Amino acid sequence: MSTAIQHDRSDLFIGGEFVAADSTARLHAINPATEERIGSIPDANERDIDRAVAAARAALPGWRRAGGAARSAILARVAEGIAARAEELKDLLLLQNGAPRWWRDQDVTITQMLYRQASMGAGQLEDETLVEAPNGGKTLLQREPIGVVAAISPWNAPQALLAMKVANALAAGCTVVAKPSPETSLDCYLLAEILRDAGVPSGVFNVVTGGPATGAALVAHPGIAKVSFTGSTASGKAVARECANTLKPLIAELGGKSAAVLLDDADVELFLSSIQREGLPFSGQACFCNARIIVPRKMQDEVVAGVIATLQSFRFGDPSDDETIMGPLVSARQKERVEGYIRSGLEEGAVLALGGNTPTGFDKGYYVAPTVFTGVTADMKIFREEIFGPVFTVSAYDTEEEAVMLHDATDFGLSGSVYSRDLARATEFSRKLSTGQLLINGQRGAPNALRDFYKQSAFGGGVDRIGGFLLTKGITQPIGDVKMKTIFG
Ligand code: NAD
Image 1: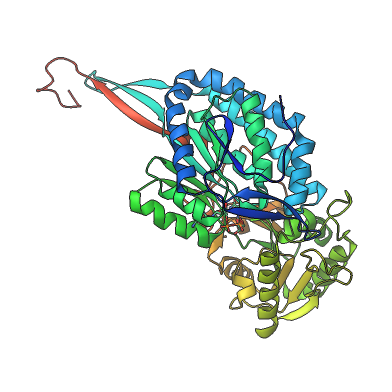
Image 2: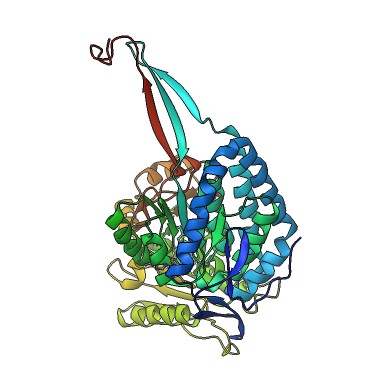
């Protein structure tokens, strides 16, 4: 019972229905490859948020009572629904964030996996355990959903990043008000249809669209019990400040400035083969991308030549061409931001080895050429700050201690890679680095090996898990003479 998606939306998904937004303000969606307007979404106001939170609160007792097995079955159907409508989702992603085919495929595949995993988790949830104290007293430990969750997500992998929040929160028995990024909200309407059609009861999942002010009002709403946020570190700090006002728990996945460190026995070809997926994936618009390359001085020329040749070999341009590896940036704002960093690199004395401009023939669309800076030192802005664009910095080191110092010289600690032919050496070196995830020789991360993100890349652990949406209540039952007993008898 799906309906065709309209690109001009004046509605929000609240209480299981698409209802007219109270707000008449609209935000426009622009195709980043062509700069054409493709639609619009409501910039939801506080009355819209009130309605969505009220619907989520009303749905909470029923969703909790439904139990883990029923929630598991529904989440499994959501995964099936995503598979059935995968191409529609990917078409909307292409129009909104200009992601190349391979990145869109990955976003939707991971999304299905996350709903499947959450379905399994919900099926295995134990609501109660009985703990016995040394005095024979019994305490019933009851796990309860924390309440209504605000799920706020960015545009770069919009479906998967929202799924991490929504799938786990729903599995735990929470209800959700989602606030997707204004750049990618149209696909969230389709997601709402998929959840509704999979049997998610009315009010359990709601969508309010809008920009940062809508997000901030949602975070501040007294009916929200927990906030799950993914976005930039700057926005994360604003969200954390708002959460502090009401002491709402927050889990935030934030920015990154990850690095690939090549040790002096690294397989350079292997490293070069990782650039598409880990170096500058989606034109560097990925939180985990290894935008810094840290390399032994004696290998620098070979590595830089290889990086340039690899970037030049990528099909660059129109993301609707399935062979494209690097397309446009998401927005005019993002292009300006990246160009600002390129100017700053030049001003601070880094050497431009490739790109740094709008490539010829790409005057329409938000394109920036793949760019490589060499001679980048730890005090430069392009080394320390997240650019979120197709810009590599290359820094040379003489000793491994210096490599560790360079690696750790940012406020971020999200991800990173170490390249060496000697697995034991790479593992020992990885132990010294201040980051939450290290991929040796570009090995993909195992989705079930849950790790934290370090430093300003996260707050509250930074990885959504079902347990993060549960609270534990202890109900201790009296034995004998309550007044005389201590817990030890
Ligand atoms: P952003 O911080 O501008 O926006 C993210 C979301 O937060 C959007 O929905 C936005 O409307 C909302 N928002 C912004 N300010 C807010 C506020 N004060 N209160 C409530 N909501 C607010 O980020 P973006 O440009 O959409 O995404 C790119 C950023 O996200 C990068 O920094 C990237 O590293 C980060 N990111 C991190 C991860 C991760 O897992 N750590 C994954 C993807 C993206």
